[in-house]
Image (cartoon, rainbow, N blue to C red; front, side, top):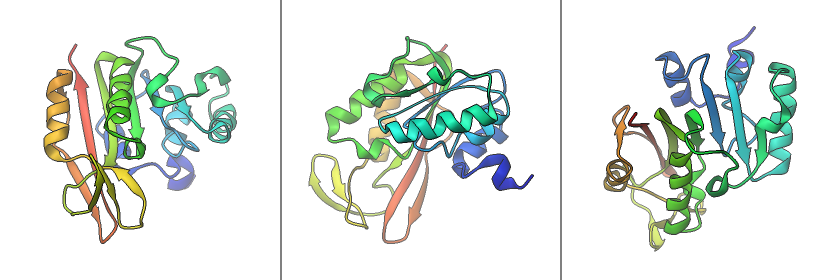
Length: 200
């Protein structure tokens, strides 16, 4: 089996959390904004209890198909067509919530805050929220309105900064699992990894 077959196109920072034992067998993992399931190949094949949501019915269908092969014991109902700010899960649902490269598509600050609140709501006490999102940490961008900027390829993204993420962490009563880590893609964008643990 090749590395690609074993892990798919997993985000390197999600992979880092797996290597360090922060995402492991026996955990209930929710991928919020799963897309076509790039971060789920290994988790499904390793027998984790995986759930996922995405607004795209086609993406959810793709993930259901992948799960039927890699984890046939998981019901198709684990994978929902839903918006992140309105997920069909009870409070304190998952041990790990992953939200990878989604939050910067928030329409405005209110939408962003609603998504964060929902991600936090479904996370169990003691659980870990993993977010990778666009930021202004490392580059300057044209501000359009509020925290919405035009990034290098012309898209409009809602971008956070260090102060915003630290304030959110404090307001939620969480603790950072890692210091903020930012990758600067030359002339294009900055992607920050924000990993927070919910107090037990």
